[in-house]
Image 1 (cartoon, helix red, strand yellow):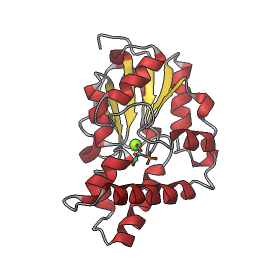
Image 2 (cartoon, helix red, strand yellow; image 1 turned 90 degrees about the vertical axis):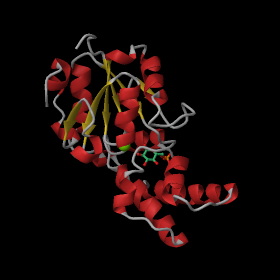
Image 3 (tube, rainbow, N blue to C red; image 1 turned 90 degrees about the horizontal axis):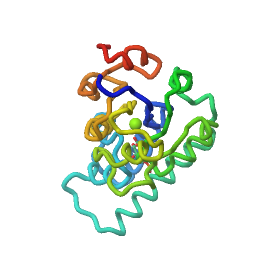
Image 4 (cartoon, protein in one colour; image 1 turned 60 degrees about the vertical axis):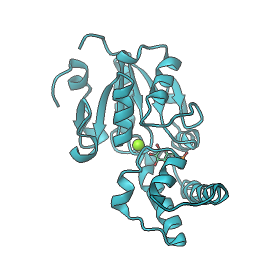
Length: 218
Ligand code: G6P
Ligand code: MG
């Protein structure tokens, strides 16, 4: 690896905590109420996408006016935010906080790079806001993943070159965004979702920074 790695940018939903499931349940409830075809499998392609891109992907060819789009996004978000009411630090995914601490113990800077406009709310619930040196979220940039913008913004906030950043991601679109940003991509999840990452591990608890920093094979 030519550039020494200096920072780790963590996706939030599906990496630090399992809110990927709550996003899914919110979309599923909206889809059921509106008679839109949707299921867990269809949800896989929504991972990491912004709220609007998620709804457009869910709609497929079906055309709806802007007011309806807005109302449906608001309704799904209300379901999602309500589902966070009881969230606590116990809802961090196994190994996630340890992974952040491991990165910091190696003098790496750490940031959040999440498409979610609710990222700060979730981090507050997990009592992890202070754990990160920078937070780039759905309010930070115009173009959502798979565009590289969000991760480039995280690198800018950290004052670290993109090539010196590692991204930890659970979504196809997130791995695409990390690679487009010129960063090392660590995928957590199955081969068919994140197999194109530089490294792949099954879960956050399996991520081995020794392997990533050495540039070896997982
Ligand atoms: C995350 C999730 C997506 C979600 C997106 C927007 O990255 O992986 O499933 O749609 O953020 O979240 P928001 O909370 O702004 O609706
Ligand atoms: Mg994610």
